[in-house]
Length: 305
Ligand code: GUN
Image (cartoon, rainbow, N blue to C red; front, side):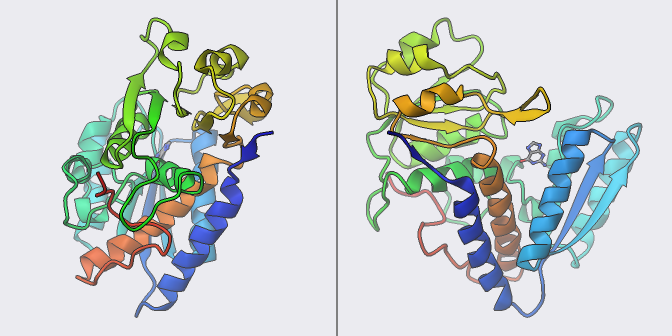
C-alpha cells in the first residue's frame, strides 16, 4: 500500500522553523504582494499567503490593482518597493492580464527581493550552482524537500543520486527550475511536455514521476503500469478546478499502485507557501548581510553532485 507524502504536516514543520528564525531577528521581515485583476483563484492563493505570513510573523502589505492596469503603472509600483528598505520581499501574483508582459515584470523585481525566485539572476545562479546566496523558486524547492522525506539526504550524498525522474511540464515556475534542482542533486532527468509523442514509452522503469501540467487524469493506471514498477513515487503539482473541487494531474485510483504520492489538495500547495515564507526570511538575511541559517534537515543550495 502506498504511503502519502503529507504536504500539510511538512508545511507545518517548515513554518514552525521559519517562525523560530523570525523570533531571533531584530525586526519582522516584510513582504509586499501585488495582485492585478480579480481572478478568484489568484485571490484565494494570495489570501492563503497572507494568512500564513501572519502565522509565522511576517508583515505584509497587499496591493490590489484593477484588471486594466497598464504595465508601466505596475513597473512603477515594483520600483517603489525595490527602492524602499522597508520591504524584504516582493511578490506579483501570476497570471497577469494580457496587456502586461510577465517577463518585463519578473525582470523588474530586485533579485534580492525576488521571493518567487523567478528572476533570471536567481535562475542563473541555480543553474550554475552558485555559492552566492540566492532565492529558489518555491514550488520546485518545496518538491525537493518533499522528496528528501523519501530519499534521505546525508551530509555528503543527495538521496536522488542516480534516480531516474520524468518531469512532465516545462513551465518557468515549476518544470524547468525543478529539472535543474534534480540534476544538481545527481538525478537523471527526462523532460516531457504536451508535445511528447507517447508518455507511456518515457516512463518505463523510472523511480519518480513529477507532473505539473494541469490535466486531470494524465497520471492514470495505464501510466503506472507502463513504469513496470509498483514502488514509483508520484509528485502531483497539477491544480485544476473541476466540479467545484480542486484536483491534481493524478487520478486518485493510482494511489494504491505506487510507492509514495502527494495528494491534491494537501500536497505540494501548502509546502509551496511554506517555502515562500522561508524565502522571505532568507531575503531578509541576504539584504542585511547576515549568514543565511540553513534548514536543519536540508542543505540550502543543491550543491551535491
Ligand atoms: N501563480 C501560480 N503559482 C505562482 C507562484 O508560485 N508565484 C506567483 N507569484 N504566482 C503564481
